Length: 241
Image 1 (cartoon, rainbow, N blue to C red):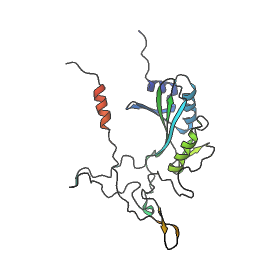
Image 2 (image 1 turned 60 degrees about the vertical axis):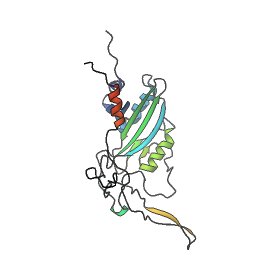
Image 3 (image 1 turned 30 degrees about the horizontal axis):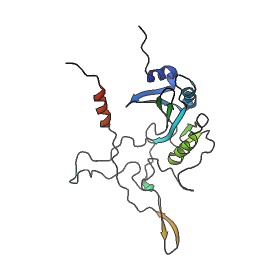
Image 4 (image 1 turned 30 degrees about the vertical axis):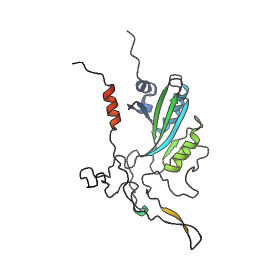
């Protein structure tokens, strides 16, 4: 009998061993987690070895896991207005700047996430790399392997403050000149720090402290999507009675 063919996650584990900190397949997507010191080496192999052949980099993004899984919505007592369950928000992003949280956060906070595509093998792969230091998150740059990573990494640096070591021109790309902070970090206030308006008396644009009150707008609840549950039920093998 021919030996059974290894699944794609098992092939990744067999090829990269301990360098693959985890390999998870969920919702039809394979995710492999790597340490910063293995980031370049493993991705180079994924690009160059015919067995994998991931010749295209689709995306690079940053992620801040501070407050991941926290729930700021009251799900036990529903108001008379139905879904108006927002409670007084105290989580990341819902506070004034002077009273912002200053804790260390979870063991793993900042991560760079990339998506690779293999055209020849018709396969996609998601890779994640957590920075080792919260105060100065550093991840190796992929611009040497995929030049298209240049602008993607600048976006992640601008919005999350992730330093991509080896990047040839790591400058802000979305925020304005002189912008302070990184707006997609969870400890950056959702209302911002300043607001801009035109002063008719001074006849010029002025900056002043933001006047919007912090509030809870969107429920931050981590839960399974019912679409995946329905899909799994429909594709499950039918048991004959």
